[in-house]
Length: 355
Image (cartoon, rainbow, N blue to C red; front, side):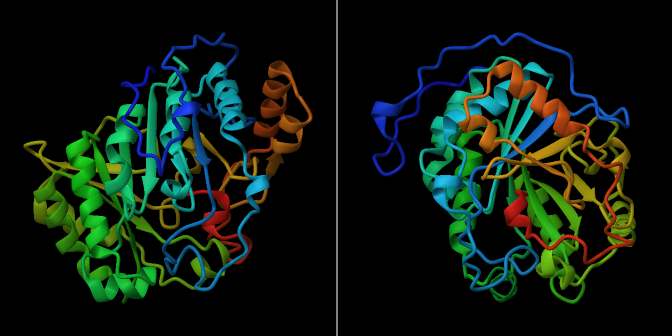
């Protein structure tokens, strides 16, 4: 996937002396990644920071300061090596996450490097959009195709309660900047919590339909004590209500390679997605793993299996050895999570794994 061109880079964001030339790189393709349950892994989610400018109640506790030391973050060249290895083994989709990924300095430069690998056909970004108005154009020109924005409320008081910040204006500015830059689609992720924001679902759906966004309703997961203390709500009944109210029909094709199941208006103008890790899990078709900012490869959000790549990268491992290490790691991928049977098992926060 080639980048769209070198963006004009603000001094606060980019160091022009460190630009990556937009040359395509053709990597040698090897055997695809297949786990021991026969699932093909073709989707890598890369966390570029565990820091965030919000404190969403289900993700990171207020006052949290236990962030990974910057010297333990994977450098951009190390991330690109890992991405290249995955690409050679059939990974086509890369999603940049956090924390809040737009807090990582020079992020468009990393995108340009990833986009040079021709096997990678889709680069996406998960963000809270508070900083997006600054960087939308650069990210799009560097090669990001589409974005997912975390937005759990349109009510300022409710947003403040969930995120700990009155960030409504900056998020709205970010969404408009994303539209103008050309990201398509823009998906809004709403974690539905009983008694917190469930009364806003209809309002959020109408907002997304009017703006041309895709709304995705997500069940809260018991990840860390923040997730375990969130007000879980089964969104199955909500789905049926929305399907009936808006006369939606199921979408046969996938929209992004993730776990969401989509419904669309009959004229194709409006789309709703539903992610149900608790009430109707999708582990049998799981095609993804997560690379944390410190180089730890997590096989599952709801299990502890992991493989540390940073020590190997910094010890001078060869590309062939890196591929072999990743294949070993994939063998650790569990069959499914245990959120429903061991709800207090995962003590790390979502931001420490990567969303």
